[in-house]
Image 1 (cartoon, rainbow, N blue to C red):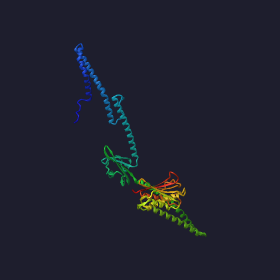
Image 2: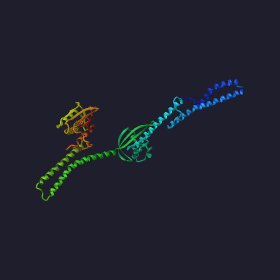
Image 3: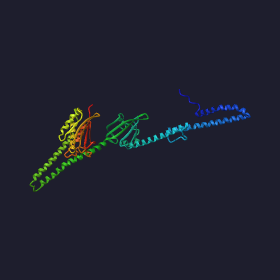
Image 4: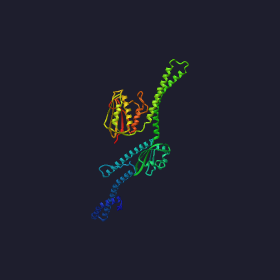
Amino acid sequence: MSARPPRWSFETRLLLGTLLVAAPALLVLAALLPGLAASPLVALALWGAMAIITVVLALYLRRRTIYPLYTLTNLLEALREGDYSLRAAHARKGDAVGEVLLEINSLAQRLREQRLAFEERGALLAKVVATLDLAVVAFDDEARLRLANPAAERLFAAPATQLLGCDAQALGLADCLDSDGGRLLERAFPAGHGRWELRHARFREHGRVHHLVVISDLSRALREEERLAWQRLLRVLGHELNNSLAPIRSMADTLARLAGAATPATDWRDDVRTGLQVIGERAEALAAFMTRYTQLARLPPPTARDCDLATLAQRVAALEQRLPVHAQGPEPAHLHADADQVEQALINLVRNAVDAALDGGGHVTLQWQRAAGTWRIDVVDDGPGLPTSENLFVPFFTTKPGGSGIGLVLARQIIEAHGGSLVLANRDEGRGCVARVSLPAPT
């Protein structure tokens, strides 16, 4: 049952209440004045004057009481409208209304600061989204586009004014609103066809579910990475080929001069034999180079089976004859992997460690331990440490005379094919390097 609205306003009830408070005094005065006054007319005039004064004082009290309430109303209305600049005057402590005014002024200041901070964060976020090279779009609960940054405008080849309000189906993104997280796909947008990474997340606005989609062009990044990889590979390949072709070209010129000479020298046969020997050696080196390249390019996928990491590591340590390799770790150490490939990877790492240790103190350690669901295998040496080069894992790059440049690359390719990782780093506690292999441990 709803409450009945008052028939009189607060101001009217306040005025009537004030007059009712003064009514007993006026009644007493009306009863006493006839006996005190000289005539009834004078008594009536005095009583009327007192009544008028009472009404005037009641009106003044009503006005003084209502004025702060109107001030509060104006302040609250300003807060409701988002205007936080108004402040109440005469707000002071020790006064009932003044305390309320102080609290409203404090609330207005707090809201003003919060809105300013929110607007600053919003402006920063808008600039960040606008400068992103990723297309950022947002859809409402009806799959209508509500936000598109400049990268999205370039992706869809249309200004935001034309895109806003478009359906997700028309933009080719309807299927992306049904799954959370990221996904890779090949798709044709107005900006072009390529591989894209789409990330979708849901958020709420005004209690309704909205969708945020971030689209990144992987084709450009992949092409750039591919270009850099080809540059590094061709630089190393060119170096290797030039090392072999330069002496072959020089010997070919020498043999051509010998063949064209009118009077051959007496030792021309020795020169021809030497030249052909150099050409043959360099051709053999090129053949070996191509064999190594084929080995790297045709690594078969691993055939995983249960094996013992401890036995495998001890066998690898025993294969090295130049220096004693200390193998230490828990036994048995169960591993589910292609034992032949993992052994080959460890052989390459141990060989590199021994090569480095021969220039140092001559100590190499192969150790393994289980941590956080993985087997961690460390090959530690006390050699000169890693060179300052970013090409350690570039195929055919080597800093050792006569090195093939595929040992580290092949080892990392094997380890990553098993779902692990290979990291090279200089030792923290002393001279040398550590090659750290992480392989998934069976549960």
